[in-house]
Amino acid sequence: MTEIDLRDGELDGAVAPGPPENCTHCGRVLLGVRPICLYCGKRVARNPFAR
Ligand SMILES: [Zn+2]
Image (tube, rainbow, N blue to C red; front, side, top):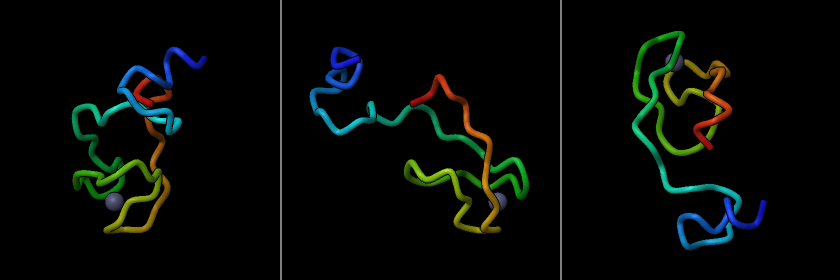
């Protein structure tokens, strides 16, 4: 999986951010890579392919 990790030029376990996702609870845009909404504090089920 090293090739995928290097896809954005950095071996940090994450690729470059894709299009913003919205919280499924409050609808606000999720910031960063955390699966927790900053606004309502609920865990958001993120797309496993959007890593
Ligand atoms: Zn939320």
